[in-house]
Length: 367
Ligand code: ATP
Image (cartoon, rainbow, N blue to C red; front, side):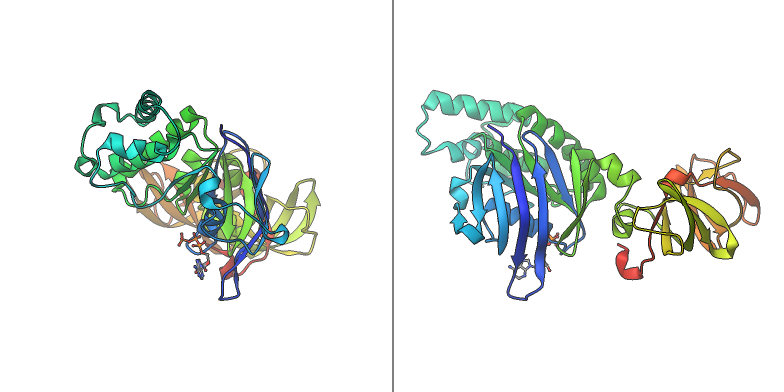
């Protein structure tokens, strides 16, 4: 039965002294897929390895289905083989000398099952990953994507309480990666498994996760459903890591509810979402996604006229560099036609809900 995972104040410090995981807390509900997302070295793999029992946490508690499996302060440490967790890694980790069926049946040995029971479980697992017709093939004759599906079937065949996946798609070529990415969520959901998935790929996180946890420097910065992470990033790093590429310096003039008036470069004022901690007078950095800038008139706040400074045609879309707020701002327009010439003036709207002000940051806050 899949179970809830609870991670509380998890900390892991290696001999280097700098915490790899720094006071991380989150829950994965039974049947939920949570993705830990962040750049290389942010601590996501170490978090996963602590849950698996491959790394011993320095502090904090880990629970599966209410059972404490790790709590160094209480001297609790359940060994990996008794945690009943399935794992899938980057490398395919299949037995090359065995058939597909033998690979998937492998974890069922020594579990006191009848032959018929084993056959049924293997058949179900192969069905789940769409490999039923490959059961008797030598595993080495399969493609990388198929081998990874064998690894997945093998990790699910004994119905673990929790499935852990660490960049399982990163060794596949681009096309296979996209195909298996779309399949993975369906397979995990069909099996009803609780899953914790680690990746540095934003799109993978969005496609797969019910919720995404963004990490940086060992800290969990935000844990929320994908659309919330994309539409209300908790801080400058999350905004930048998930693709906001325009950063405008400004100062808070006044607050109106959740929003504030900001004076930006060139004396222009705009309305932006303003976190509660920021008061009038505060220096801020406003993050804006190129794809959230709209061309044309519009009504409401944040209408500006801008000069087109440059354009980059990309076939299905064009990126325009606009002179605005005394800076160069990128705006993306979808469509196969370039509609604005360099040197012309265009009207643009920056919807206030898509302009986010954060405490003034430095380059180190950006991804
Ligand atoms: P990647 O995607 O590159 O694996 P990550 O986000 O998963 O990155 P971790 O592998 O968890 O990051 O590493 C977090 C930090 O802990 C890094 O600074 C890393 O160098 C350090 N670290 C990881 N494992 C060890 C170890 N066994 N000994 C010492 N330091 C380690």
